[in-house]
Image 1: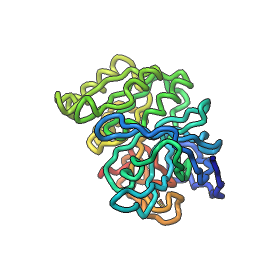
Image 2 (image 1 turned 180 degrees about the vertical axis):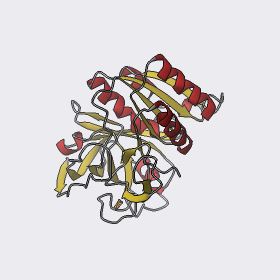
Image 3 (image 1 turned 45 degrees about the horizontal axis):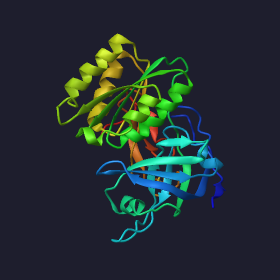
Image 4 (image 1 turned 90 degrees about the vertical axis):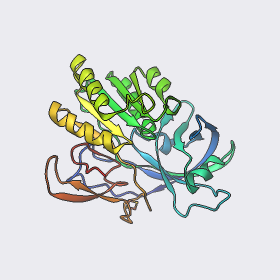
Length: 291
Ligand code: FES
């Protein structure tokens, strides 16, 4: 049984942030678990039957999950989880998550038929430029899951996608098949063979741009890839965005637990502070301060 309780939402101020004017309705969705399977030694794929409001989730938005208890105890706070996929025809939302703490260990225990309280969708998603023809997705680790829905959006808009996927080892590369099915050109780089080195990734991105100019770049999951992409995008004059991961409290813009510093504008020295849950989690690439 699915339930949704819509929470009245003030609109975010857009005066300091990039991207489209947010217009999201957050609801507390009680979702039935349709499946929760391991995809490799570290990650699980969770599929939930979802009500209408959850099915309106956009690439880059997230849900705040009330994780069930693990054998070692229960997480005090909900866990933010970026959207991996929406399947409206099956009325399902999907997540790809790394099992590494009390919250995600609790999630890993969910079985088919259990219920999960998923607050969302929350936040500002990605905003592709209106004239985009070829975009780059550059992701590592769990960032692969966050960027994957962008390929679906790009296909809908007839935008070509090149995805560079980075991981420690080949078995930790996820989403490659999904991205290929969405029409993306996929390039895999790993620590194992040192192709994930920043120098190699820089050469790769320059070659991709020289072969077919990029008009938008997006990244998630790695500080060193953020720094690299900021530099390349600045030199090549390409707009871009990043989806940030952050510990959160309320995820509703009220507690300020998720505040981070940002540059007031690209290249500016002056800093400002923004809530990742509310003004993000997707931000302008050049305004983001690396960590
Ligand atoms: Fe409470 Fe962002 S988590 S304001």
